[in-house]
Amino acid sequence: MKKTIWKYKLDKNLHVDKLLELPEGSNPVKVAIQDGWVCVWFCVLSDAPKENRLFYVTGTGDEVPLKDSYVGSTSTNNESLQWHVWERNT
Image 1 (tube, rainbow, N blue to C red):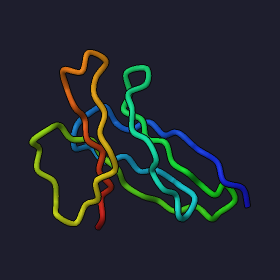
Image 2 (image 1 turned 120 degrees about the vertical axis):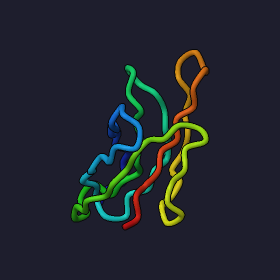
Image 3 (image 1 turned 45 degrees about the vertical axis):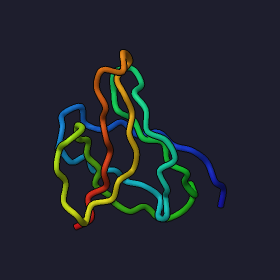
Image 4 (image 1 turned 90 degrees about the vertical axis):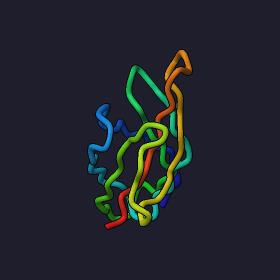
């Protein structure tokens, strides 16, 4: 198996789940805005079996379920808004 970094775009709408098919054991390493999209980069084992995981974006001050996991934050290009990425843990 080889380790690499993969990028995924999340839904631009707040609190909308985005289903990602990731190699098992993938770890988020970066959250940033790219071309107007909130993106998450994951360190993955590219040959690992795939699993489905849910992620979503919130704004500052938005409430999230206690069981969900914080992934990271990023700001808009002019830094007027902050976006926060969460993994839904069902």
